[in-house]
Image 1 (cartoon, rainbow, N blue to C red):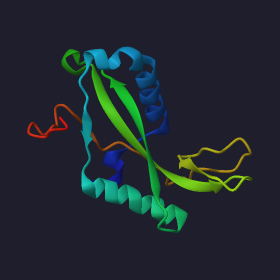
Image 2 (cartoon, rainbow, N blue to C red):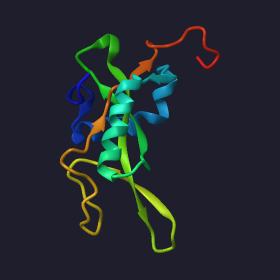
Image 3 (cartoon, rainbow, N blue to C red):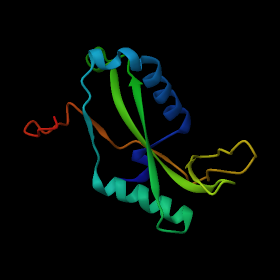
Length: 139
């Protein structure tokens, strides 16, 4: 799969994350998302992009939970999403490290660019159900 097939605009990621947070208190009462199936090759491509941006092997990713609202599909009105973004370490004055999200075209409160033109929000996962292992004790 190409990167274009597996990335989404930052605005879409924000909307999905907000949808999840707005519905979170009641969402799991009515839906049964238990896990996400992630193609290994896509995860490898995402990690390779992060390593290229950092110039090191200290790559970490952050996963955000979201919900895509599909009002035109009554059978699948909501689809759970797991969105992955790269992070980069930022040393704080006290010596602690915070991993900042690498997002397209974003900056921190001080105007320091956090993302880059080639930064991506990755969405290549499939929720379980339907992509579940029916014999797994975790299911």
